[in-house]
Length: 207
Image 1 (cartoon, one colour):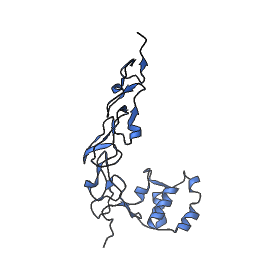
Image 2 (cartoon, helix red, strand yellow):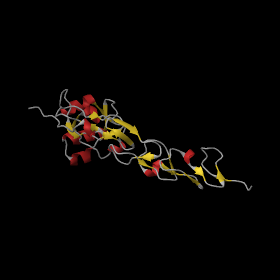
Image 3 (cartoon, helix red, strand yellow):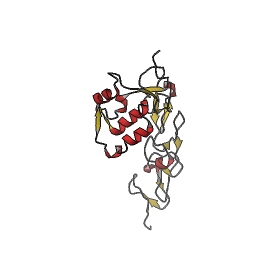
């Protein structure tokens, strides 16, 4: 019976290990492919590739790789957990499928339904929209975006953390929660902004 990768595991071979799709393996890619398919012991790997970081510009071609392993036209292969934001539903030797845009899934996901709205995005699965400026979302899923507090304004859409999403209003000004921009910060009594987008409040002149 043919060996196939389980659901949640993607098929990996030389063309996948070749991360820059150059048709050649860098020595580090070559080392990792040997490790993945178990062709060589860790001790031999360490001895053979001890200078790999100094030889980043050396490559082995696809034909050399096949010849060295006497595998004809079939590349060595292995199964690896589907990476974040991908999934695979069936036991087949195929690549994992990317989740829709702006969605997230954990490693080893087996179904499209496991792709939920990404960090900084909200809504129903597969129809995720960026959190508005003045809000943020520090976790994946269909949760509502959190609001920046009073006297803060938003730095832009699709923010993940409160620290990057919420900017303090200028001194002597205030704004309601979830304010989209600095224009929402209104100067207090005795102060004014030269323009709505000004980043500071100026004291009014006497009289």
